[in-house]
Amino acid sequence: MNIVMVASESLPFAKSGGLADVVYSLSSALVSKGEKVSIILPYYQQIAKKGIELEYVAQYDIRMSWRDQAVTLYKKEEEGIDYYFIANDYYFRREKMYDYMDDGERFAFFALASTEAIRYLKEKVDIVHVHDWQAAIIPTLVAENYYKDPTFAGIKFVLTIHNPAFKGMLDRYFVSDFFNLSDYLFDIGKIRFEGMFSTLKSGIIYSDVITTVSPTHREELLTREGGQGLDTVLEYRRDDFYGILNGIDYEEWSPHKDPFIAKKYNKTSLEIGKHLNQADLLRSYNLHWYGGPVYGMVSRLTWQKGVDLVLEEARSILSKGGNFVLLGSGEYEVEQKFEALRTQYPDTCGIYIGYNNALAHKIYAGCDFFLMPSLFEPCGLSQMIAQRYGTLPICRKTGGLADSVHPYDGVISGKEDGLLFEDYNIQGLDYAIYRAEELYRNQEGYYKVARVAMNQDHSWATSAKNYLTLYRKVLKKK
Image (cartoon, rainbow, N blue to C red; front, side):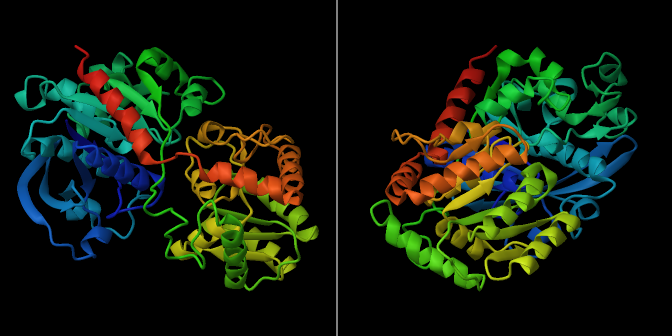
């Protein structure tokens, strides 16, 4: 099977968030199963700065209404994956990947150029898998503008919604101006959403199947409360809508061979590994341990991640003699509140604003509990990474957190691998912390649950198998 991923980012070349991890890891897992995979990306300035030697493939123009925009297509094979880069200095030689006023135009160009790039792939394509709003318009472009073109005959389209909050909302004027599509599609409602043109909605309507990143998040998106406005559109495609839980990269996240942690360990050496790595973690933050549990968090510091609950709960944790460490960045106001918390508890609270990969590994290995009380979380990866290291996640029961954590609730039956709470308020998190501390006082029970957590299979091999089943199913569709 020849599969083409189209996304705005992917490791190892461009990353701003979890999308890059997912696109790369899924592609890598598919390649390991014998499939042919290509990934089409923008050629951002941050990629160009790396000085990577690329193979020239083609040069062509993209028509955007009255404008012709030049495309240079490059290629790089890396770990069995063929990466194709869409180069245009005007759109992509910029300091950042996103957050420009003309992002709608930039990714319209990317979608148009990526569609044309399929012509230059040497083998016939079976599946085009597009990710989020930046690439979601491609199935529409093919259906409306390339329906007589034999290059695209028989190709099936899969859309994955990673972040439903971003819908690619544009003024209706751009339907024809950017995409050379008929205004009729807007007028009849196929691509219209809340009075504007939505590239994400267009992908939902035109793709052969739609997926999102966990089974529970699929159910949430079909509800008025959790659908972020997409519930009625997705209800229309309910029978073609699937939830497949993401995996984590076991090459990067493996306590038995992690180069960043003080003591490598496995299930049988968990106690000594946890003890030595916790001591190293606290030294990294210059903190003192008073015998209580150590709580950690690695996160973007935004309202979605439950930072308001963490700020309140952390004071309670620290006042009782526990430790709290944080690695993350985000909203400036939130960053300053965590800095103030460190000032109040300098001996037991460690805050690192920014990102540090080695420190992230130390947190996953050295903490007893990992905080993830998200308001919503389509999938989440941190809770699975924590489990991999025998660190018990404390999560709100939402999205992929609900699918990947089997909660301890006062009784150890051999299935528990973390803690969950339902209501998004401090009382809900208080209850989960109460259960966590109860478990921590029973060290034998704690390590029994921690070993169950380490035993969970959150590898991409499982996710890739589910995607392959879906690809084969959609290829059989008329």
